[in-house]
Length: 126
Image (tube, rainbow, N blue to C red; front, side, top):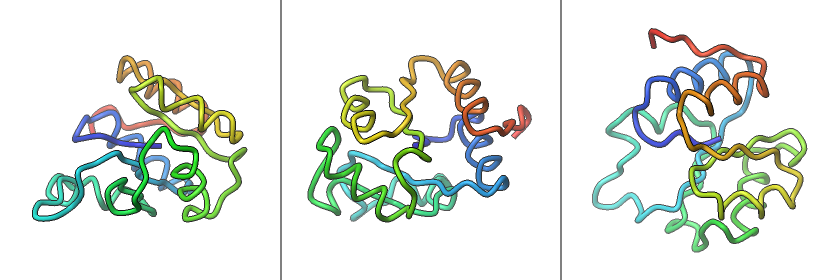
């Protein structure tokens, strides 16, 4: 699952998922972390157990290799994982590996779908 930015529902969902024992991975096509780490300063970095940033690993979504690397690092089989992304092109490679995918077109809808898949409830006040 990916949380992009400081959206309240997404952050609350990530916290609820971790509290329920789910392992979370940040998989991001990003320009890197130097000289400025965009995740660290927003507090997003700490929401995840694993961080896979495209520039740092030398590959990017939708290359299937980056999904395999993320699965390896998170230590779970594809069938036990959910991947959410706002770009539809990034979903089919994950789905072909056996990962459940969620196309994020609306934050509230996506959070509701992920809550159902993960069996958690995001705190609406968080």
